[in-house]
Length: 121
Length: 121
DNA sequence: TCAATATATGAATATATGTTCATATATAAT
DNA sequence: ATTATATATGAACATATATTCATATATTGA
Image (cartoon, rainbow over all chains, first blue to last red; front, side, top):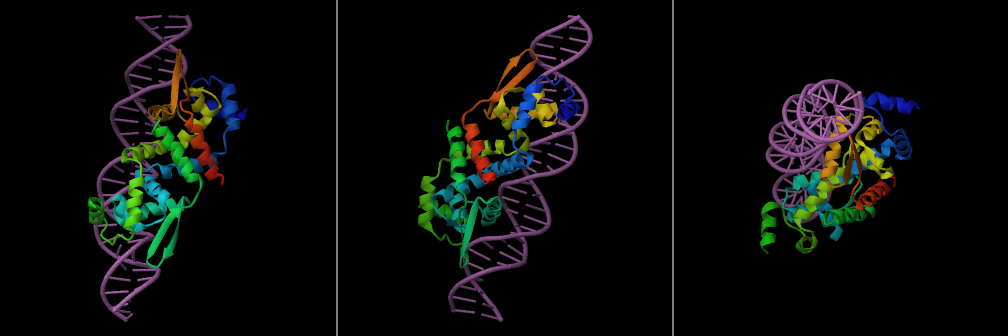
């Protein structure tokens, strides 16, 4: 009721299907969840990071390996690995001077493959 | 061979694992596919668009419905629907003055749910 | 301790993108 | 025809973000 009111406040035009709106509203996940979800997909939404993830499907790799593989500067790879690390998509282990990165989550490949299925029709 | 050479041109430090790089290189999808994949995820990587998709899981909705549901301006919803339309994630049908949007692809929910599984642990 | 190497990171820059505002288009009703 | 309404869209603005450059940190070996 109060929600319908706030809806009318925002949408200056006539709300056409109150029932549809109410039903959708009650079935939506919490705002915070949807925010987190968008943030997750945002991490996947960059060519460099997609390529990094794709490389790590094969095996763990050090920063220099990835840098060489993707023909990109060590710095930019390192920056992007930080993004992936923050999103808990990759983890790392240090071995002397070398830092090895690998995938951190089982869902990653599933998300990736579903996207691939859409893209390759 | 020539690829290793170009790799060394880019990566000024020592390439540590030639075999790992070669193996990963041969197993990566084409660049264009990875680009398209990143573009797809980029579409998912925005709170407004995620909310729109989530709303459409319930049922088709007109622009004004979505606008009211999400408490956002008609214009911004319309702009975002165009992005979703361009990405072939939603389709629409016109009925008089009203345009109804609905989901266009079966993969969408799978991608969405996999992401949700990651986010909600 | 000093030099070399692998990686990380802050600042700067360029580019991309989401929302707003104003307005255009399309359809229906009078 | 004119008006009202639902939606679309171009331009402007603000913000986010990817890469580069310079440099810092961490580790190893001499």
